[in-house]
Length: 261
Image 1 (cartoon, rainbow, N blue to C red):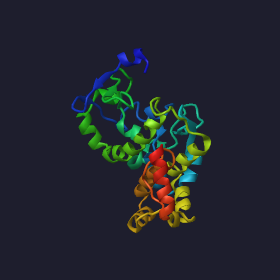
Image 2 (image 1 turned 90 degrees about the vertical axis):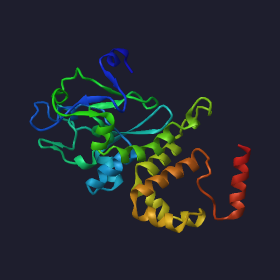
Image 3 (image 1 turned 180 degrees about the vertical axis):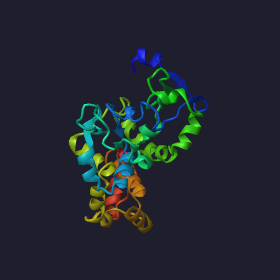
């Protein structure tokens, strides 16, 4: 993070307070939703496209841009409109059309984490946002509860464990995903409709030993499906013991191989 920018911001802990209120009466209403980079987590995509009754494939194609991080991990960014303001496609004069399912970063505004690996939050109280000059005072803890952040944090934690896995660290070999593994991660985490087809339209459940109640849950519940995708990533990419083969001989060979690695 740029040192000059950091010096203009105030650092907050969970119990520190700040003042903020956003409403249509402010002259700057909706302006913070333009010309900004918004990276989406898998749970962000799940909530946003479900609120619009779109398949994951259609939502990703219409509203996102896929990039690659240094480790080959897919990074999904919201695609802004090609107007002079680079406006968010979900913002109207009345506000956000998917407000109940808006992304994590929009919920957290005007505060944001110091970094992905460090505790604490930052707020730029010198910004031109008029909402910081009026309204109720909040602690970070109160703000997160008010904005419905808890379920996002819970769902995002499992994905964070993947993106910051030792597999990518220098001590773990400094691995980088090839195109095949990057696509596997993209499908299992972001393109859930395609991942579900892979599970239920192939012999997946004939090969892997998955409890019947788990199969029923992922058939009906997309949050469960996403968590199942995280398990699949850990099995395939990190070689973790999150799945077992139904064939006992095959499973024994797999466990023996893991013991050697």
